[in-house]
Length: 102
Image 1 (cartoon, rainbow, N blue to C red):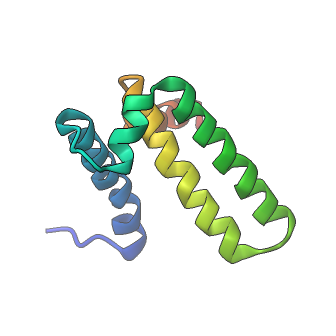
Image 2 (cartoon, one colour):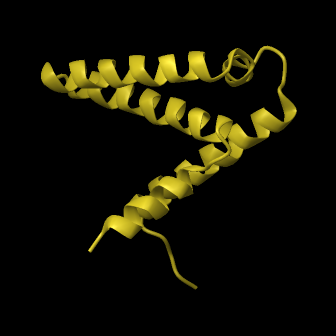
Image 3 (cartoon, rainbow, N blue to C red):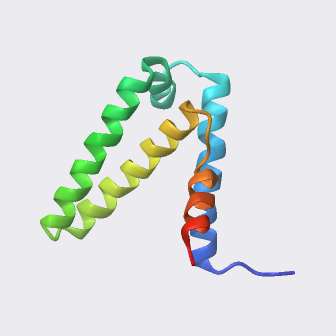
């Protein structure tokens, strides 16, 4: 039996988060922020991805590592929501990156 390193467990959390977001899309529970994004559609979700990308850049440029990581996490969350909305998963991005790796 293989024991995963902490880094491997952390990366696998992205799949867990993807599964959670998939469940939100399937169930659309009232009062859920994720549900509200799905209800508002592509325009709102892409707006949030752009907003979080800009905030991530601002944190990086300001050498504010705490803000950089916080906003980067928001960026990945909203990107996963967008992927899900468009019928994809975070693993699809991983596969694309793997294809490019030489």
